[in-house]
Length: 251
Image 1 (cartoon, helix red, strand yellow):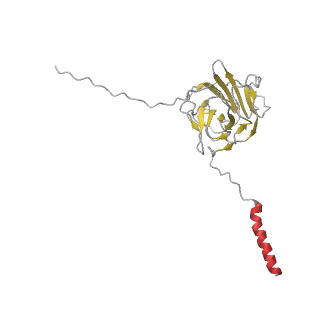
Image 2: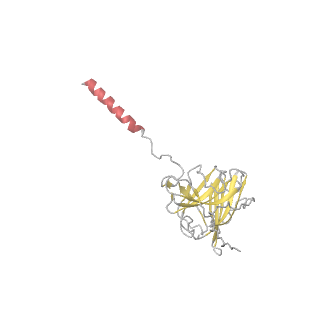
Image 3: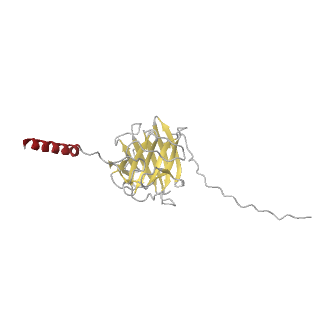
């Protein structure tokens, strides 16, 4: 009898696939609880006197757990599409770690996302590595987008997921645009608000905001920032010609 030599198959490798984050449908902690602001939580709200019962245009509550080394972010926006907070090393937009919650364009479900603002005029990017997010849940309630994201304090890869034990200027952004669970955040409707200084999100405090961000090449818009010529600059040459004409007549 003849025997066949055993055949071996070359191992097949599959390209890594990105999974949509698991989402809960319950509204996370409505209404917002600002009772711990400055004592147990970090808070920012717009307007600063909103109560959290549907009157906040934007709100952020952050709580740090030193035992688990995890940070919980609670984001809310009345813009209806997404709410986000960016962590900037230089108070300029670009090269920022971003956490956000966004309403799905088809199902209205809300997903928490880890994203990245690249430098220059490139749009926001969905981070392929979502492992810095431990858990997330979101909801769309009464026209408001809300989510709770639990993130590790210091991720294993800090190239695009920053070490949150450090100081960062916070960028508060929101928009009406929606997107799929694996898509990046869309362009914000208004210029993001910037915290009035660099902060450590592990420290309980109330954050103020006093300025709009400067941009190292707006990553979401190609609009020019050049100013039109002033009225004085266009009138002066004409006036000078009139004076010359009058002088000619008198001579």
